[in-house]
Length: 256
Image (cartoon, rainbow, N blue to C red; front, side, top):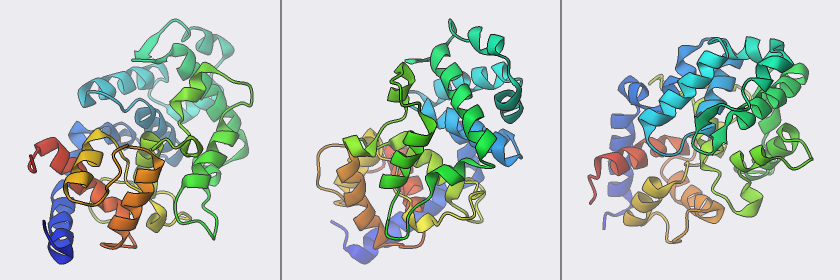
């Protein structure tokens, strides 16, 4: 087992290796990278993150299908679509269990949010006494989702139900992290990246256990917080950069 300094140096090296523009071309983050307007980036990013499970090529293809439907102008489509545009979506398949009805629901909710807010950042504010996005994600859910239960609610998971909320955590990394590498956008200027967590899935979970960063067996919110504690010892100001290290190690199977 590596000692603390060795592990820190190893993870810093791996984070640096994978946090490069080359990373963009194979990752769903390429979808928001096609835009330069903040709201386009947010909408395209949120939709791409929402369907980020399974094969990365398939995710990108499904996200491109959504961009096509929106005329490659997500913000304009959100603000100016007609009810008929949304009705036409209902029978479409998009990505696995995320279907046309879900897509239409998300467009409606975005419309509601952007009529009242310049940016989605307003819905993810972290309180002064909070150290991660546990409560912020729940506040976002309460704002974004209608109170009436809908099938689309399942696509935005709740940390209050102990979900790792992997896809939202990933979206937050994209929007909040700012560095010189140009992979993450860093367009949310009022949100501190020290509060970010690692998007926890099978790969990052397994690698974290292998490196002794977490001991819990489940990939749930409690494990997200256990990983928070471990990685913030390496870098308390930019803990989410280690997502690149854990992800890269998971993909290359270097530790197997």
